Picture 1 (cartoon, rainbow, N blue to C red):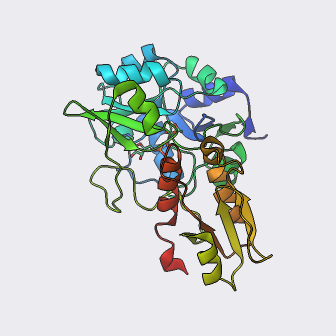
Picture 2 (spheres, helix red, strand yellow):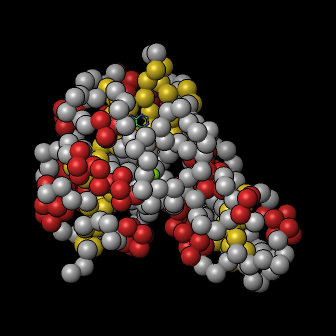
Length: 323
Ligand code: TXA
Ligand code: MG
């Protein structure tokens, strides 16, 4: 029997029984388990080969439920929750004891989000526990934005894949918390800084670029294809690699010099949202193609261009050594 479908009852049953279900969200697909069951959560780390120091996000379908799992929500974060949930926003909040240490890697805060996808919201509404779900990719690889991406890479590990089509946003959620009364942004994502600041005023950027971060998550090398990915001016890169078969990722339109190159446009109209929604599937497509290496240029550092560039830089972080 196919492991992929739209059977919410089946998904709920599997989660109740301690199994793994891939869930669609507006950002990326998540690899879900009952967040209150440490044994079920351990299966997520095993399936993804994810280090235990990297904590998970828990998902619920309502603010009322979120309040069952956290001690409190500081006012500015509550304002963000009320404005952007369901949506691509994750909040770091003081956890209640019922949230197992394996979910938070021993931290006192838990990452929480209400995702915006009708199938997953319906599923979550039928559960009396939150669903812990990291992106449903092997650790360090490109995040999945279609059910088939999950099936190809974690099809054996997962018990069921709830197929909700292509993810609309295509970038993971923006992660926001508070330190010493200041609002901090820990991961650039589907909500732009401007979106967030319009609601709560200036935020402090705490985006970790280190390859050995003090705080978990946000590793320098991440979201990476297996093929080398180089960032730079496209024409220059083409000249540098004239003898190679190139996969080219361009924001707007672009004409390659050599016919052996494949060019993929993130958005011909240079629309940031469209570009974000195509980013991971484009990287994946070129990674699976017969090109030797992938080249791309950064987008303007504004709006979602910031989050897209963050993913591209992390995806490219280990590539120079590969060529
Ligand atoms: O859009 C998303 O956020 C997707 C969908 C499935 O919801 N999930 C996702 O999860 O991107 P994941 O595990 O790939 O990324 C979660 C990030 C990691 O960088 C992790 O370190 C950070 O959130 N994180 C989780 N809990 C944290 C905490 N208590 N403190 C600091 N960072 C935390
Ligand atoms: Mg991830």
